Length: 471
Ligand code: NG1
Ligand code: MG
Image 1 (cartoon, rainbow, N blue to C red):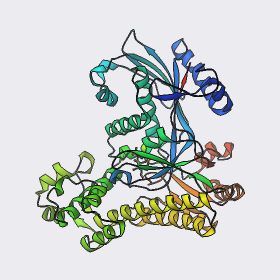
Image 2 (cartoon, rainbow, N blue to C red; image 1 turned 60 degrees about the vertical axis):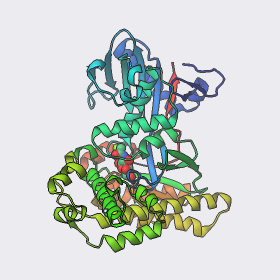
Image 3 (tube, protein in one colour; image 1 turned 45 degrees about the vertical axis):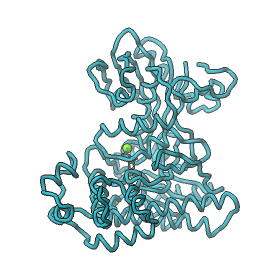
């Protein structure tokens, strides 16, 4: 495996730097996975792969359920990732997928000519149905809010772009991957795919979506240590309507407010950020507008139809989607308030991090913790996306004097916590093991206790985004 041989990165293929062998070998964990997956590939397909791609999961530090409203977020890439070993086969048009965990994820074969690919749309007439053999190895916890699905989708996009010989930069790849993920049926924003490509070792990223995708590195406060703890309550978002229901409520609230503000094109204003821009409102004015206008806790279909001047049928066809057509009640006020206040918290969090990078301040660091706690409370109360198991983790965190919040979409999954030092993080992790993990049901204990729960509760450092290794 080689790139330019001098240990530095080289730009090749899909506009992504290729990691040189020396650099790769420095990270023994990554190198081991490459070796293992390469051997598995050879055993499956009888030849070596041409290249590998690695796309990480992420943990969002603050800014939850705001990306699809156009507001910025503050995630970092984690070390857990999806690895693909890939070989191109120009002789045929077969897609052959094999997972290292064969028992859990059986192989899949198909003729590329019979599939529609999201990335195909982007490549247009340049698309060639070139055969691909792929071996997959993933260690991002599934359905846990660490973005395993986006790491998978983004790795497929990167591998395909490379096989197709397409030069794309990281932001383009992130946008294509976000569009591709919409095929799964969740009307998600672009946070996960953006950090999957833009992540950089040592810093979190402030990711803006408006007016266009932009990532700014943010140095997290020196000494602080972030811990991820998985409640192990799994939430398969694609199989439930909860996520899309929130998206629908946000879109309906946007139109309601746009109409009340007298905007002629109110029907076309879908995201809160576009309304904010159209009305030149700051965060506080927006919050006041919501409080003054959306005065009911629950709106019925009849309320919405009356206000928007549409029939029930129009409501269903224009504003609801396949898995939200059943909705009878809409919590416009609560959802809108969460989004606007959470977007304010992201801006404050970034600003404090920037101030702390210049000079330490106890008050500043304390404020970060408060923002994380407020974020969680809002997700629980206004957005209703927590889970009893997540609440137990949060309660233990509070007892330990650690600020924590649910991360990702919620309804289970992981929390992210901020500890004052590496030692404090160790103590906190031990407390979680003692008070939460030791009480798991027997089948989960059997699986995780032998590893001392290190896959489900761990301190994490910001890692790199997508990488390509050439064989
Ligand atoms: P998770 O739960 O990690 O899949 C989801 C969305 C994000 C964002 C968060 C909530 C997908 C692919 N991702 O993340 O875009 O909206 O929820 O902040 O659905
Ligand atoms: Mg996901």
